[in-house]
Amino acid sequence: MENVAEKQHGLLELLRIRLNPVIEDLGYELYDLEDLQYQGQRILRVSIDHEQGIQLEDCVRIDQMLQKLFDENDPIEEAYTLEVSSPGIFRVLKNPEHFRRFTGERIKIRLKKKINGMRQAIGKLCSSTEDGIQFLPENESEEGLFIAYENISKARLEPELN
Image 1 (cartoon, rainbow, N blue to C red):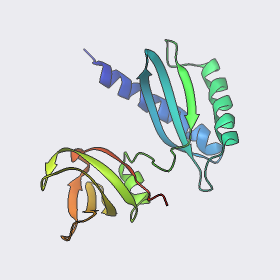
Image 2 (cartoon, rainbow, N blue to C red):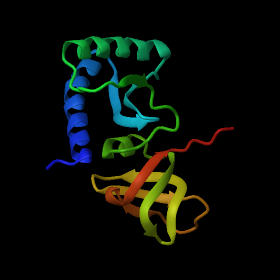
Image 3 (tube, rainbow, N blue to C red):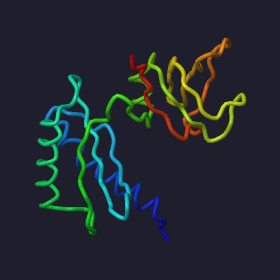
């Protein structure tokens, strides 16, 4: 019997396959897709990106296009709210492509288990491979650590705001 997480993952993959070409045809990137529960309400969050950034008009344009697409064939049976947004400056890093794109940037990571006594840290994303990242924690004199993706529970950009 399929559990809720597997069913949700399957839905997100189906949506990703359906939405990616449509969003790309309009000149945007489907950065992330989330199926969330917030205060008892289901939210389908679609994060889009563009090399020149995302403006409110971009979100409205994609929202209208997705509403039309879902009016024709909606894969979600129960009520939900569609939310289209930019990933923002503190964007979440989820897949190898995200880490590759932001090599050299300051990030914050949370690990599933401690590595070298560290469970959470801010530092530099030195490099990335298909298996993991080379991470240099701030205030550490030693060289960076290799952290496998499977050991990262959460990662996001952590720009210094002046």
